[in-house]
Length: 313
Image (cartoon, rainbow, N blue to C red; front, side, top):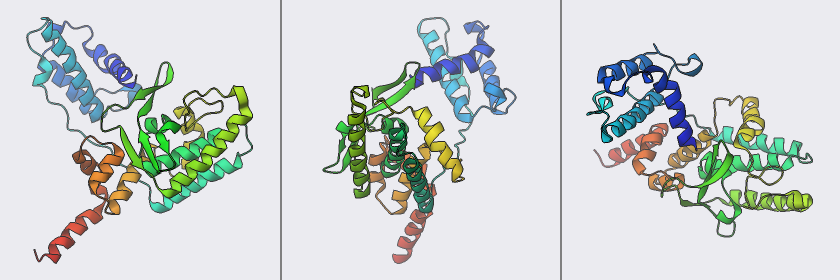
């Protein structure tokens, strides 16, 4: 659903307004290159007058190329003009990670929020939100993977979580999907602390289910459950239970995905083999892991220099 939504919005926002009235055969590489350049230098703005990111421009160029490739295949045009254009250089946004002290502050604040609402009708939402943060920090799982987690994939005896499904938010609400790639399907060993937290939460959830009786509607056994058993809405989680705490702690530059970045960076800083980190994150290649995180861990470079010194090189 998210992929479809992105293709549709890109077409409506960035392609149709500028090329929609042109004959396909009349569009030249120069026309497309000029459009790319004007987006890149800020002459043309995006939604709400914002400058379009290099990532969005590159995606738009790729989607446009797919359209023209199809036009070539069905005989509308002889050549794909997009192939003769150059995309802008990709400018990556800075990754934010939490320090150990900030991790403890966040966990403590989420737990305090839970205890302040332990008698509330929405207490399961607060507890589930706390657990969602603990899982993300302890496993590096993505938002959709955390909220798509069911108890049949949590082994509290042997201490591991199997990532088998994710949730996607679309026009029909939140729906379960299989993970996107083979490497995304993985088994993540978890710490003793996270095991204990999950055990305590599972018991709390079971007692809550008994209290609700037939009002509880969950048929999947979701871990991060809302008031009546459905998956806790990710948008409600962020707006009501997560972002207010970040603002309270002056950490409002942090996103949920940064918990994943934090998990990876902390492991690498503890000299954990990057291959292990790759497997925990579900990255397709170790290159992706190293390209994303190695510059955030200066001690890795220091270790390399120390190794050379010890060898007299």
